Image (tube, rainbow, N blue to C red; front, side, top):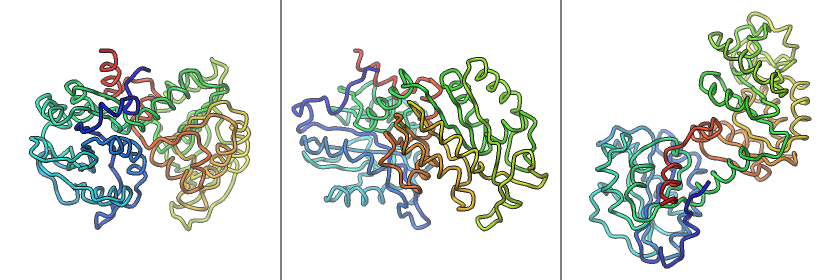
Length: 397
């Protein structure tokens, strides 16, 4: 995939120039608007530091939360992000409000944070007038927000049509290169883990991966739907009976290719959904009508771990159980350790997946950890991402 990178630009193209960086600072906040996890902010630091070191006049912006366009509430402000950036960079970071029309100064080597971009009317609709106004603010536009690459918005796609120089930041470039390596020409066997509560939210990616992988591992409510499709008892476990035919279609596609979709033979059940609920391990065939399956059993986890140890490439999206509850974390823990120990090229993405990686302390042993959710899944589906297409089109000019 061809696109221009920020790190490929000579310092002369950055020194003293106005550089507009679209980052992904959509971080979780608590009740008093304090940041509870700054992973996404830390991921954006290399691009910011690169531009600052080159002497650029740096402007960065991001969305945060779900504000009403045109009128930001206090909880929608990027003020906590500005403070956090200041701590990481060891310098104050000024927050600029009402910035679309310009009228603010940025010194060479300074970073200012432009207030929540979704507060601007027309941002989500990708309004061309707004995009042109934003492009007029800068000499260089940098998209370093892969997490928003699946959305055609004014700061992610529209501005790229009009800015003089358009390029990908280090985080965006790394995401695209890692995902490309995992899917374009993967070392075999290629194993994908797709887990979560609903088949419906990941049906397209399951369909797409069924054509590519050597083994497709499903977990959570998705696995329950596949078990139901095979006639297994699942009690009152989370599942989507309306998607049984879709599950059977994917199973048939996998089998026709000679690939595999292993379903758990043993599971961890409980009678109620609670951290302190009693957990019972049993064969799937013995699941009772009032049981809830909240994790895969140890025999199933061990069998999957053995497959992962022999993999050439592993793509991981979603924990296979309710790992937040200790009694139901065993399956995800075993698979996480297997991924960490595998000689395979490993890439993981999605919020719950990143949380599991952090919980089990394997981040340093995964080749690439993506902070993206929706964009990660849409890339796996093979769908064009509007912001990425914009980078590619500008590189072709």
